[in-house]
Image (cartoon, rainbow, N blue to C red; front, top):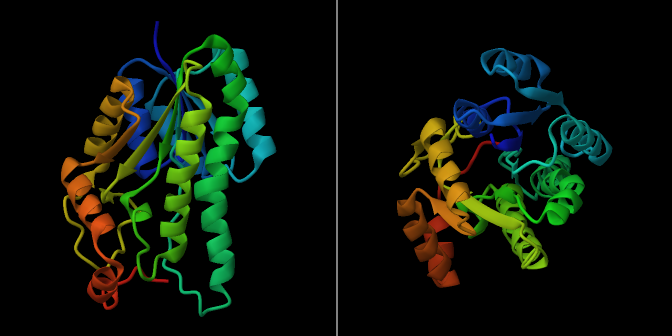
Length: 250
């Protein structure tokens, strides 16, 4: 029986690559994105995909998406909360407060909104995987990227809480922390991005993590080492190293 997979942020970048990957395996895919034109283009490439123009910040619209998908196809096997946004921010600028709000609403609350309408059905069936795309940026606060780092740190903690809540109920909660991936989100980064992956390579690695039901993974493995080292650095040394580091443009 083919897998049933829901993916948010499916219209470009990593979400698009994940959609193509699972559709290539013959999965029934439900694709959620805000940008209708890009979603329609992707849908034309993937026969049989169910597409939904919706914003993960809008809980009611996501509930409607979930209800429609489950009425058509039944309970999904995999729900991937991939939708995310990033932008350079600095607390000193009042206008950046709204940017902080939007990043947190999309990257954290949007993840909650996507998972919520599927949990009862998954728990009742005693199966399924809830997959959150976090980031190694959640390991330490990056200068100029406070909102993004904060959102990904919150996502990591939220997913851990949810994993414990689902323990013993047959529902896996999987946290995936990619390093750098070639997407529109990283296109304007003014700094070197070590171990960067294409979106297709990242999607394949993520799918293997999900298939193995590994509960926490950093990809690629080289970034797992870097992230661990950064986490263990004393604060004074981390501050000294990153105080003058290049920053994501505002």
